[in-house]
Image 1: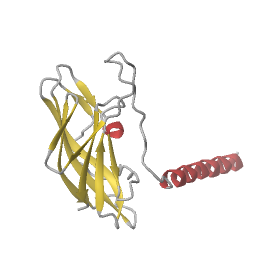
Image 2: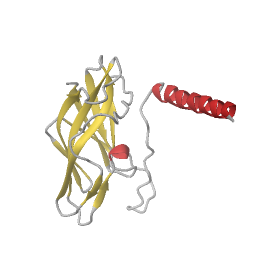
Image 3: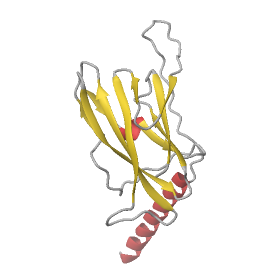
Length: 179
């Protein structure tokens, strides 16, 4: 019985290592297909418009307003970043101008890219202030929190991509220097 337990643990460890290796070899951005806009009745695919912003500025996408409030580095508490990496936290506020409540999804709506366009992984152990994901009431309701990412110590220029859903009328990019 002990023999099978060791084999199972070995197989599980191999699967975990292989998954980590595959995810670390990501060479580009994740592209989300844009759904056809059928509101006009033509069924034609309309590419979203691109909006550029800086830290402190606000952009509106549909009924939502996004403001990147600031960027900071977290050196960790109990856990620390791996050697050669650091954790960056991006403070974002979202305001819902629509009549109905919406749900902010930080894992699906936001992505951080390095200067080569690669996606930066989420730093789940970083200590962020506030939780961005969750319900946001309509009629001016707001939600604010930090998005946590892991970047290399060599990364200097970063860009936050904001795309609230695959049918969003536009995509916003906020470029900034790493702290």
